[in-house]
Amino acid sequence: MITRKRLAAGAWVLFAALTAGLALPSTALADETDETTAAAPQVNLVLDVSGSMRARDIDGQSRMAAAKQAFNEVLDATPEEVRLGIRTLGADYPGDDRKKGCEDTAQLYPVGPLDRTEAKTAVATLVPTGWTPIGPALLKAADDLDGGTGSKRIVLISDGEDTCAPLDPCEVAREIAAKGIGLTIDTLGLVPNTKMRQQLSCIAEATGGTYTSVEHTDELTDRVNQLVDRAADPVVVPRPAEGTDACAQAPTLTSGLYTDRAESGQQRWYRVDVLPGQELRAAVSVAADRAVNPSYGVLLRAVTVSGREIVRGETAGNGRTDMVSTGLRYPKRESDDDADKPAAETVCLQVTHSYTAASGEKTAPGLPVELTVDVVDGPSAADDVASFGLGRGWWLLGALILTGFVAGLLWGWVSRWRVAVWRTN
Image (cartoon, rainbow, N blue to C red; front, top):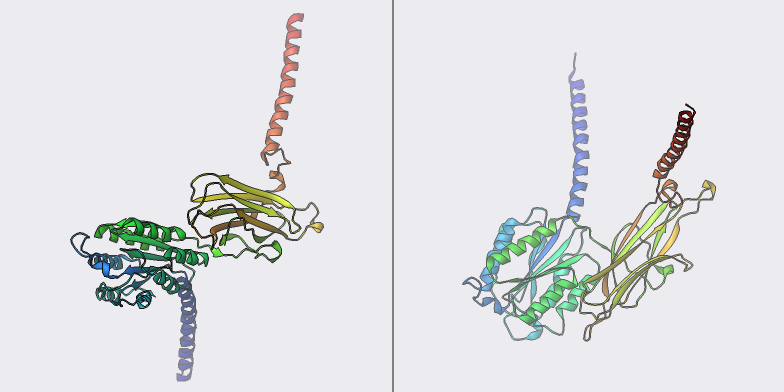
């Protein structure tokens, strides 16, 4: 007979079991959510709200009205996984004080999960007002995107060049790229002139972004949508790696994609540990993010810690180029005697390029360097060059050759025997 005490005890056991069963999935779900949030792509839309945005030359309406219409459509189409924010420049200060005008940038909507209604309400309040502090706005916009492991993108929409020199927005973009945070800046020019086009193009090129000229509302909407969607695409974000002037102090790299900066002729050193039986594959690309002179080259060397060169890759050119790349391979062989197998060998990678900045261009920060390191299992002894360069297939080829030789001898002997028999008869 089931007593009340037994019934109560059974209920408590059932409750404890259910609680434990629910707690574990909840904890796992929380951890998974945290990882997803950290890896979420981030986009910061930076909008010029300076006085010139009052001009009515886009499809019969003002530039500001066209931008608002485009933003509303973009907000409706933004993928759920994208963390989106909006920053303005020139939206608040209408006066003539240059110092105050060049500080006029504000975060209209913070980068994070998108509340479409709230974001649209914030955009609706914008009125063309003041200056065009593109450089200061880019610096603040980069800070808005701080943190996380996902892709980071700034989309700058402006109808004029920066009015806050000597803070050159192109130099600001290069400084942002030099931080190695994997941030891309795309620029869109509304009804552009030559000077604005050059400036916005330079900003985009400094970070590997794109520049687009826009003269119609639907073009603006389509292009911003494309850039927001592109941020949601899975990408490999390079990790920053600050090379040194000597191998002894160089950072140790594992397989992955890395970014750095180097001036012309400057040696940048990195270290990679390669175990017996492994192969080191490395490649380097140097991008010209400013005007450069003809005649350039890039060198990638693998040397021992004592300075002996193991292998090198190099390339050179003469003429206009946006990027130049080279690579190398180094197989670390297994020892024949297991007892004498050496420990991991430290390989020093040296990167040098000979790009020189054109007249009037700054040399610092250096040009963007992208280094790919891949340490994989090397070829086995059967696949070695010593095996006739044919891998395991040489055994089959050898057997076929031997079979053909024996068959030829037998056929020749039989033929001679048949002829001898025929002559005898």
